[in-house]
Image 1 (spheres, rainbow, N blue to C red):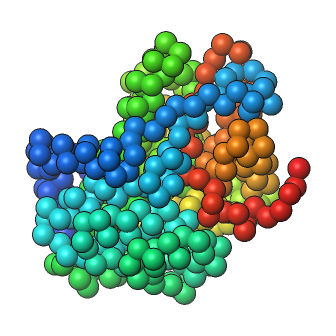
Image 2: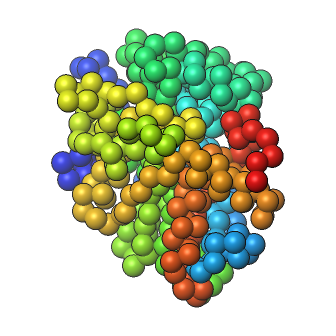
Amino acid sequence: MPRRYGPFGGAFVPETLVPALEELDDAWRRARRDPEFRSELRRLSRTYAGRPTPLYFARRLTRRAGGAEIWLKREDLLHGGAHKINNALGQGLLARRMGKRRLIAETGAGQHGVATAMVGAALGFETEVYMGERDIERQRPNVRRMELLGTHVVAVRTGSRTLKDAINAALRDWITNVRTTHYLLGSAVGPHPYPTLVRELQSVIGEEIRRQSLHAFGRLPSMAVACVGGGSNAIGTFHPLLSTPVELLGVEAAGPRGHPVGAASLTRGRPGILHGSYSYVLEDGEGQILDTASISAGLDYAGVGPEHAWLKTTGRVRYVAVHDGEALAAFRWLARDEGILPALEPAHALYAAMREARRRRPNERIVVTLSGRGDKDLEQVGGDRR
């Protein structure tokens, strides 16, 4: 597996973690070649997670946008309500293969925490999830779900009390308990081999989009769109399409209007090191990580996966940022037009896709990865605003 994507990636970690990362790298290399491991992952993905997810033509939303057709890759229909189960299942099976007894994870929006809690329960692990205190306040339904699944949720009260700080806390735990514990990192970030490991487990999204598009409308889509925080659903969407002519659009969180950076590392940041990886980050002139802002807890992160940084540098993927109010508008459009409540994370991607559709011909197709459902965000969305 590649340790770097161009200049990005690497493993900038304490010496204590180097053997654990090497063990994980070796275990994944062996597992991905093992027919028995691959067969069990496929079986659980089908019977437990609910794959494959459908490709849905959003007819009324297309009419609202005008222009190109909008299709949705329905990752929101997976067990747990988000794409996060794809990665959690694979890493859970890998942790069992490695003889680990305990899983730890970080979470922002709570969806990765829920996925880890489900896998921990299904495979018999002791499970602990670190979550920023601010995110606990705005994602209480997911906190309750994790607790009901037998997972201990640890409130992180340092720093900005969001995803960045939850990752810091999880890494400290892993350093202390590395022999018995697997850190089930939830996004395509962090030190090698995590960015590639997570991408390979999430690439089922893009692989299905390729097959389903050919079946649904006889060719690949004109464009694929996905939201980008750390970047796991986006890299899972994009990677199988990199060698095709499909245009690829990643959508970050610009935060509230007037905020200087929001949570848009690729569009407003610069190269730097965060959580053991060299990528694009939001930092000040002295290299200190900036506080981020987004209505979406899952996108509220000051960095991004290193493969996204490379794809931006090469120009293969275009990245844009969408404001809080625009994401809220897209949330309501999808709810009213299609009867689907999206998570606020993919609502950002949906708004950008609507904007793109208006500029395109009716015979073009845009596929949006609807990476999660919006039950968790109802308090953030508020009441009936038209």
